[in-house]
Image 1 (cartoon, one colour):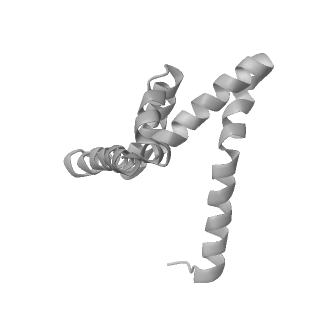
Image 2: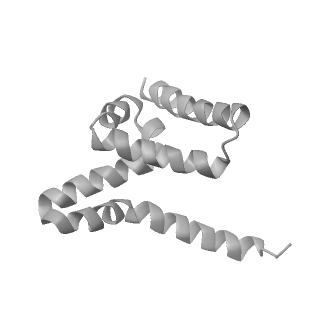
Length: 117
C-alpha cells in the first residue's frame, strides 16, 4: 500500500505541475520555485507532515518535499539554537540533497563532455 500511496501523491504533484505548464503562461522555473515555496509554507504550518505520512517518498522526493525539509530544518534549529537557527537550519537539513545534486551534476559533466552551443 505504501508504494501505491507514494505513486498517487507523487503523480498528483506531477499532474498539477504539468497542468500548470500546459494551461498557464507560467515558466517551468516559476512553477519549480512555487513548488518549493508551497512546501515551505505547508511545512511551516504543519500540514505537509500529514502528506508525507500518507505519501512517503511520493511527497518527499518532489520539490515540495525539498521545501518541507527546509522548513523542518529551520524549526529544529530555532528550537535548538534560537534566532541563529533561522539562518542555519534550512541549509543544514538540506545539505545532503544539495551535495548529492552538485556531485551528480559534476559527474554528468565529466561523463558527457558538455559543449557551448
